[in-house]
Amino acid sequence: MALTFPDVVNTPADRTEYAYRSQELLRLLHNEMGKKFRDGVISKREWNSFLTETFQPASNKISDAIGEEREKLKRSSRWAIDILGI
Image (cartoon, rainbow, N blue to C red):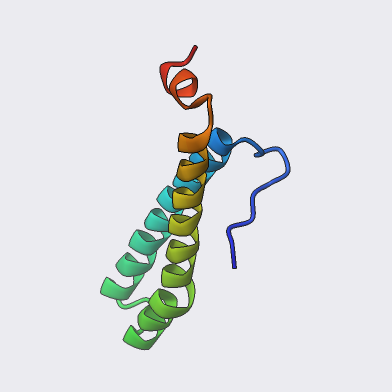
């Protein structure tokens, strides 16, 4: 299943930025859940469940989206213009 983008996020540059932000938020969630595991708030079973059922599938989805959108940017005639901000 592919990453779903909001309707207002419609250019490859915006979609790439959105995916990177999603990746950062997922990283923060991973850190929060890891802290809960270290502090004994959640069990090892709950931690492993989070990793396999939530974190890894979301991470894969986001990584795939980043790769796809970066390829679209590279094929775009606006790649250099977007990078240079002109």
